Image (cartoon, rainbow, N blue to C red; front, top):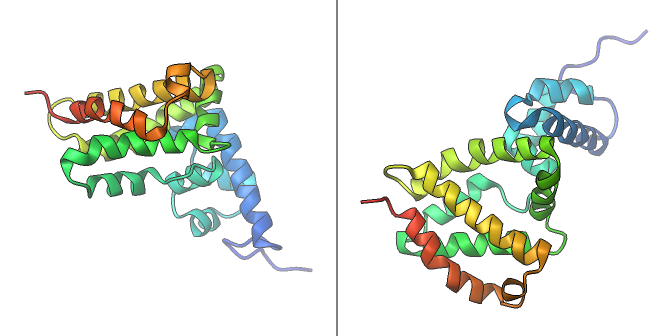
Length: 196
């Protein structure tokens, strides 16, 4: 007769455990959204102890990034842009977005595509943007209405990425990333400046 299972451990291959957690996370995020998905519920669905989820992914945000194969962690990207001189931030944001959405097989673009047709995916993406991007990125656009201005930045760039990558609008699709960054950066920079 075997003893009780050791807390935080799942017998077998750690890679199998990790896959089970990622599958449960994708399902849970898709069904209830980022905000309502809990580490405890994801762990229960994966049949592991919640401590094991934290061991593999540190927190819910990192788990979301891993589950959706996002190319960058929003916290890291925001920190990198915040370290740049304020006058260069519009250009850096525009380049990061265009490169993220333009990468071959971009998971970010797949997530936007899913959000356009699936209410669950849309809710998940909206909650993630609000919780992981807007609240952390206010240091990029301090002052009055920072979250509104950052939402305008994201909406503007997602619209460009959608037109360029999904629809293939020729003036956007035919231009290089550098050309589009040069065209977009002044507008993005203006969004970042507090209204006086």
